[in-house]
Length: 149
View (tube, helix red, strand yellow):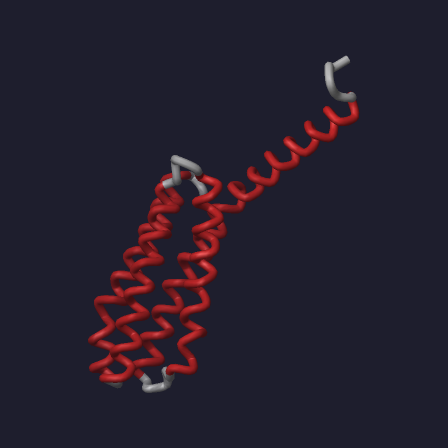
């Protein structure tokens, strides 16, 4: 018999530890797919935003549609960072970079939508969009290198 405790208490604690370990493992098992989804969505929304500005259809009221994926990516990044402790995978750092590039794109998008339209707007957003696209490719490359895709 264990001193100071009952067998039932030990079983409960052991079950809790095993379940928490499995819960953490579930996160990392789906991590690659979730990371790729966030990356693909941020790139797709950047393209959509550039198209909306070029067509003159993006208003301040429609900006939340473009900022919501950023908020979701932020929440995912916080959760992944909390689980990765001192050794975040390269794909997580790549997603953090994509998140930063997407934020810069949104800042440029908001500025350009007020100042330009049509091809002038598309041209002004070409480099910020290309930066987002390159960062998205970086996330996928990191996921492939890690064997997560």
